[in-house]
Image (cartoon, rainbow over the protein chains, first blue to last red):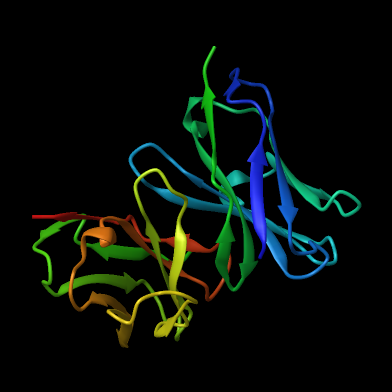
Length: 115
Length: 107
């Protein structure tokens, strides 16, 4: 059974970078696609992007050039970096396996952007 | 981007009642529509994919349907464990987009 677990700082200062790790067990990230989704206070959900089994990426244009998703196949982990954060990036961040739809999710990492 | 207009925003219903949530897509997405359930304190879970296919382990009281670009999630007999927030999501093209969510409560 695939399991995903997010980890990273829960508090980030404005203008800094947000970095999260998704550790995957029970399934290789060299298969399928692996994505990041966030849920804002007030329940809005936003797809941020994904990294494929080959390492190619696709990002939400709304995040412009602030986002980067990378991976370490030796550790079966993939990563989110979001640069130049503002208070509007305060959200719960989820990693998920993506096969046209998100069929397995992590438990979520709450990130607050505040000075 | 494809907009998904979900309604209602909140819903209070009695046990055993039939509940319907709808999503309207801003353009043709075919059957590329999924529904997720997020129970309190939990991460979202896939309920339905491909408009009508139940994900593994999902009770048969859940069903999905489509009429043109309007998609519906039906719960045939509401149970207490069904409370939570429900989201639709189009999988037709990136950026993937979600509906605004429906908060379901027991009356």
